[in-house]
Structure formats: C-alpha cells, structure tokens
Amino acid sequence: MTLATQASYSPDPAVIVASPNSGFRHQIVQSLLLSRIAATEALGGADALGKLESSECELLLLDTKLLDLDTDELQQLIHQRFPGIDVVLLDEAGLPLLPAKWRSPGAHHLFERMGRWQGHPAPDCPAPVIPPPDMASLPGMVGQAPCLQAVYRMARLVAARNTPVLITGPTGTGKELVAQAIHQLSPRANKDFVVVNCAAIPEALLESELFGYVRGAFTGAVQSHIGRIHSAHGGSLFLDEVGELSLSMQSKLLRFLDHGEVQRLGSLDIFRVDVRVLAASNANLAEMARRKRFREDLFYRLSVFPIELPTLAQRGQDIAALAHYFLHQFAPADTPDLLSPEAVQALLRHGWPGNVRELQHVIERASILAEGGPILPAHLALPGSEIAQLVVGAAA
Image (cartoon, rainbow, N blue to C red; front, side, top):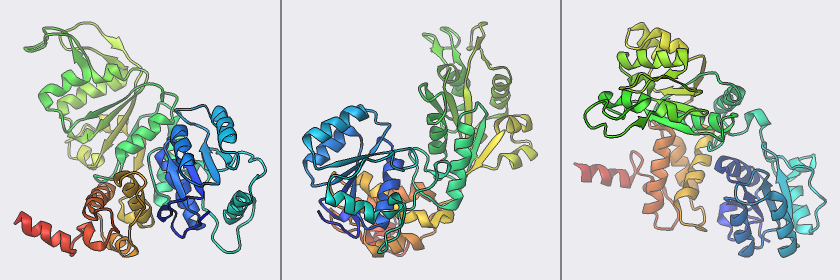
C-alpha cells in the first residue's frame, strides 16, 4: 500500500470514496489529501467494485445513498469477494456511521492518519476538515470558503419549504447548481426540475412556452402543447435570467404566482398547478425595479428568500480544489492528476472575471494542451502566458 503526498498521483489509492454525489466525493477526497492519504473516487457501487478489482485499496468509504446498488447487499458482496477490504458507511456530512472494528492493520493505520475520525488528531499531520451537516457542500458543488458555506446553510434552511427563492450573483457563479440543489434537497426531489432560460427564448414564443397552447391557437400550432409551468406540476420551476422578461410577461408571471393557475393560449380552461418557483438573475433587480424596468410587486414576490452567490475571487481558497475537481472530469479515466504547483499558483493569481465557469473552461483547455503530461502555467492560457499570447495572435 502506498501513501502519497497527493492522492491523485498514486496508481494504487489507499482509500476509495464511493458516492453518486460528485461534490460529496470530492469533499471527502480533499479531506484525505490533508492527511496525505492516497484516494480515488467511484461514481457508485458498481464503479467501486470495478476499482476494487484493479487496485490494492484497503478502505472503502461508502455513501449510504447509492443509486445503483443496495448498500447492504454491496457490503456483503465486498466482504465475500474482498475479505481484506474494510467498508465504512458515511452520513451526509461525511462522518462514519458507527464503523466496525478494523480487520486489517493497514486500515487501522489509515484511520490513525485520519485522526479526527478516531476522536483525536494524528500527531504528524493535520486532521481532515469536515464541516457540520448544515455547512456541508450542496449536491454538485465544491468548496468550503466561509462565504460559500453561508450559501450552503441558506439553501438547506429553505429547501424543505415552498418559499420562492431568488438566487443572484455574477455570471458563472453557479446559480443553477444552487437551484438544482434546493430542488434535490426538497420534498419535491422525485418530481421534475424544469428550467426556463428567459434570455434564450424569443419574447414572441415565451408565453406559449411558459403557459402552453391548444391546437389552432396560432399559425403553426398543429397540436396542443403543455407549457413549462404545467410540466413542473409537483416539482420546481427555475426561471434563469428572470430580469430579461418583458414587462408584459412579468405581469402574466405575477398572475400565475398570485393564483397558482395557468391558462393555455387559445383555451378557456384554467388549470391549478402546484409549482415551487426558483429564480435567478445576474442583474440588480431591486435597482431595475426602482428604474421601472422590472415590476416592483414581482420583485418582492420572487425575492421572499434571496441568496447571493460570491464571486470566485471571493472564494480564493476554493480555486485549487475546483481546479482538481474539473481536471478529474476532463482527463481520461485513470489518468493521474498532474496539475503542477506552478500552475496552481498561476490560478491563484488570476482575477477570474468569468468566475467558476471561466475556471472550468481554462482547465478543460489545459487538459487538452498538456497531452497527458503535467499541466504547466503555459497550458492555462491565462493573461501573460505563452498560450494566451498565441491565442491572441491567432485571433488578430
């Protein structure tokens, strides 16, 4: 068994973290990195079994909410096929659920290295930092900066209710991810999460998209169509870039929010629907309301529970973790994480005007340019790098 200073550099990880939740997996792996324990991620139970076949792992950390296999049956199968592997179930905060005593000396050593889960920190390394449940990452999100932890807490507080939520923040900060997480953590999680990009649909089509229409309602309406609002019945409707709605559409949306009813174009029938509305905007809707560019009554109706997302520059401590997370997404399977220390420093120095989305695109491009080798600052195409100069020159 090899313990490495960077988990992703080791071909034989000491620990496998299995969960369908990418944010949860990455959070645990990052905690293991702090204890210098080699670890890898598995997408679920089946993926974990495959990785156990091809590695000398001694410990499997298993999310209790697997989507593909029953947790109890998976544990029994692992005990039969891999008797030397210890399996520990983790709760939603990443803490072990009453683990059984360790059968192998290697696993016992690993838990000594992980210290915190043994009740005291190990003397030679920092303890993994695992946040309390209300501060744990939202599904699909990575990062533990204090300003982002406040977002996690707000989202978890409001998720169980039907309260409208207005998510604000600059482009690329992850507003749709927060909306998805609120839906997934709500009692509506088994129903549809319907997305409407208010800026992407032409105004002439938006009303029919939202409310639906019947056959013959207008030229080209050859068959009846249920609207996006109606299709979200029982679930959640996410109105992205809601500030782009015309004043006319704002009035129609307000009527739906007030009465919970939709009427398809060309029909006299009215349907009552049960929809939880989540909205997002990168504009200052309060300022727009003061300038009469956005209905003040609609603003107050949507912003019952506002959540403002921080920029990536405000989350500087999360940049390295996000970069490693995206690199695992874009690199071929089983490719070691070769983000060089110099590249990490270059990422930390950049201002990130495009926020997390910009970082994601930078890492995707760098993973291609590196051709399977270490990612260096030049591969990042940040201002001042050789690649950036070539790109600018080509564009000219």
